Image (tube, rainbow, N blue to C red; front, side, top):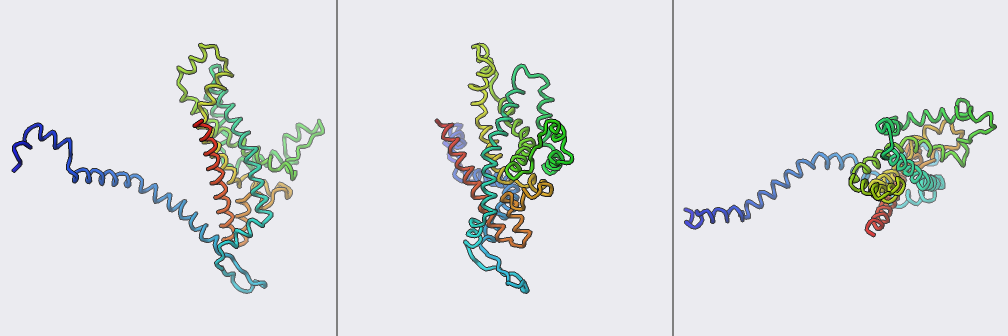
Length: 320
């Protein structure tokens, strides 16, 4: 039997306001189950598609493949934690591919983001006409698969079929697309053409989030379009620029499709170890999976470190 004091309206309100510990535990348990129910499919797929392959590659890289001199016996794996990593850092082709991709990222990423930012600012300007058409035409190259785009550009680069060379022929100019010193920038041109529109859409979306009152106030104060863009719009899309820069850094490390497609027509300037991923693929083709895994782990660690440092530097500037 409840006590008379508990049966009063004040007693009922007090009980409702301060639930028993059992009710609190049940509520917390139910919330956790709901969260796990929604996160479960993602966590399973993330573990199966990302964590498991990374773990398998890391474990595989700790073994070294030994083959007999005559090749009469099957290759054997011997546990050697640093063997593949020592070989990778002493492999001139692999280290050269790392340096090549680093140079590619340092030059191509800022140029591409500058183009993307410029396009986004032009389309966002008050005087722009046909914004939908320009957004679509800028984004269209990204909609074309990377391999198809590389095939089209290989046709554009070919001395036998290049329309660019035909236009420049009367001037006596011949573009060295596949020269050893310029082939990297031929690849960079394809990547820039393909991904500028994608980054432009991200930056343009961030521009749309700027309050109209701020832009109107700048216009009333007499700020020119350039000053508005420099002092208001560009600082406002700082987060989008950081995001696209990190995506582009990761994409540069994954450079594979474009140089692989250009390799048959490059006259040897694009080797099978032109990029780190191509080098790892070459090791796979040779049947040396542990060495390919070690190269992949090294690339992943370097990209992670560069991304972390980039976030730290940009975050420090943002807090300042």
